[in-house]
Amino acid sequence: MLRAGSAFVIAMVLGTALGIVLGRQRWLDRLFSGWLLVGLNLPAIVVAIVFYIWLGLTELALVAAVVINKVPLVITTIREGVRSLSADYDELAAALRLSPLRRLRLVTLPQLMPFILAAARTGLSLIWKIVLVFEVLGSDGGVGYRVSIQFQFFDITGILAYTTAFILVVLAVEYGLLRPLERNVLQWRPDPA
Image (cartoon, rainbow, N blue to C red; front, side, top):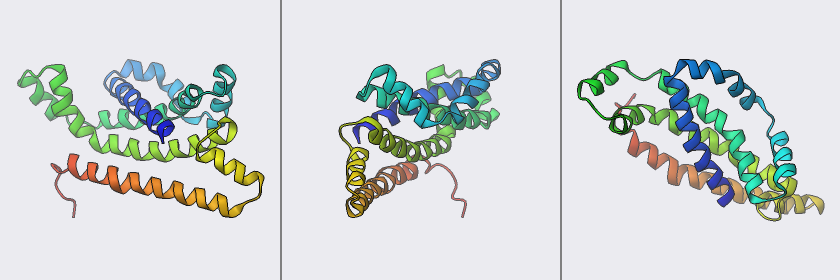
């Protein structure tokens, strides 16, 4: 949980900031769009192996590899959200002479919340799987490590037990954290039904 959680927070903060910048600055977006495409399609297993070779079988290598795999997805989602922002609200913020920080907090982030939540959901689904694979490859703990031990003994019951525990954690995060957060931060939007 600590590995996945720390990688998730770092990737979301970094990806959101870069996504906002690339969404606002077209020349930077054009400059980095090729690298973003490479990052989106780079196999996670290759990144894991490279980071394990560079940094050893450490927590830093695992978290860094997960962040490298997740950030392009967040950047892309947030960038598209920035492109869809309402120009009317920007004009209003300019007329009210809001500082850049207040404009971000009161105008930009509320409009980006659906995109941030989408990036969080897709990111969590990706991060859980990547962390498990990395733990199987070269960790001395975690669910992935335990599953690899169960695999070595052909213990399907153990593998299914760890898988069930993993799924329960994912469901707890979704229904205990993300859904209530979504209801809270998007309550200003009209109900589509």
